[in-house]
Length: 111
Image 1 (tube, helix red, strand yellow):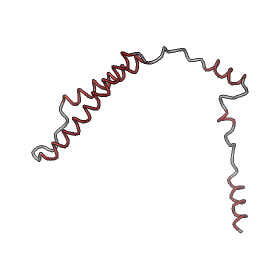
Image 2 (cartoon, rainbow, N blue to C red; image 1 turned 60 degrees about the vertical axis):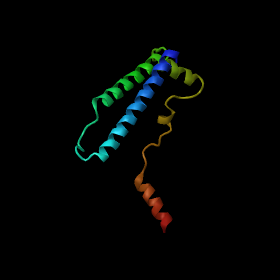
Image 3 (cartoon, rainbow, N blue to C red; image 1 turned 180 degrees about the vertical axis):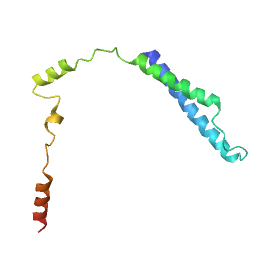
Image 4 (cartoon, one colour; image 1 turned 30 degrees about the vertical axis):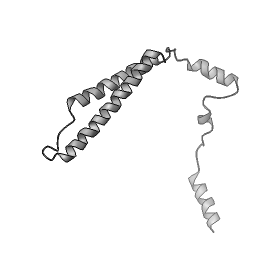
């Protein structure tokens, strides 16, 4: 990550933390105020949260590596040359299970 993207990400996290703390303080304030208990969050807290989330996304996008095209076929060929399979989890799954046979085996062990 570059300095700019790191700075944007850290700043957005500070903003997000501040928005969360402000929301906590506002809800704490409402607990002691019995006049209007159905009040929503103030617009500045909501705006701060949205801006912080957008800045965080921007910082992460700016700090990401350059995108490369997806080449599953090349990756799978490389694994198969090494003797590994990318589909090993499918090859090792159990086939059809004979439930009736399993019940009979279980019943014979119970007797």
